[in-house]
Length: 313
Ligand SMILES: C[S@@+](CC[C@H](N)C(=O)[O-])C[C@H]1O[C@@H](n2cnc3c(N)ncnc32)[C@H](O)[C@@H]1O
Image 1 (tube, protein in one colour):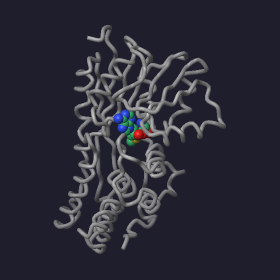
Image 2: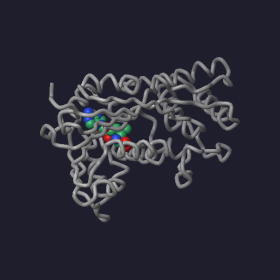
Image 3: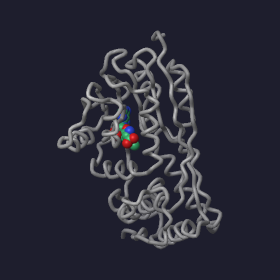
Image 4: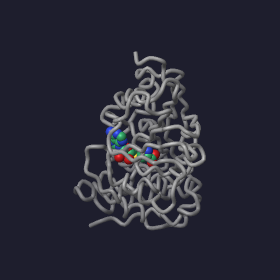
């Protein structure tokens, strides 16, 4: 029997993390569309493209994510005739924003292992032409099929957390970027995820903590944000700057989306390791703690930039 714990609840307000036009995406809808299984973004797994897209679309509406995208475009120091690369672009939510920096002469290369995401990207913009050239390429960041110094700058956003070999991706990004070009990355540190659960009963705290641990363990490289600048330096990039940005989890809907609280509890119910009543009860308690402003959470993201040195040594 499936849980229905996340029915829309107006008392969840305020939702300052989610813009108005997406408020109709209540927790129930998110739970239904994202299903009850683990969501994997790795290159190797066969994905359900629809679930994948839904997740990325919801994420792209979060102001914190939009700000990081804008910041990445600025940090790439893009000129009008540049060729730039987005590694693990997914469906590249900020594609049209590149119009103003690439103009008519520039080219954006979107690289992703999943053809369904790239297909969606092409279809979305078929009827509203972009100023610049768009080149969609299927492949992984570990083996970028571009020549040395072939792009002026590149970025990787919320991707290294999922890849098998982050060091290899960064060394490939360095290889394909011209001397002096910018390499930009934005990645979470799942090990910094904290949700204040002091309001919960002891036995609920334990269950809730185990859900947070599940969320961290489901990510291939959970601490990537924290060690990202080390990877940049290891790839030989220069002038490495690491900015830590704190994401505030202020309401239950956002906590549920980020952590997958009901999805993870549903998985346990399906595996017969948790009763429906216990799962529903925990959701009610966590939700009401957020509604009564007695719960909040934070997670750090790292925005790291570097530039390519003169030689490949
Ligand atoms: C959380 S999504 C982020 C997508 C996009 N960068 C954004 O900010 O919306 C992670 C993306 O990484 C891609 N990905 C997974 N493994 C990869 C790899 N080894 N190389 C490049 N991209 C990869 C996935 O297909 C997915 O599109």
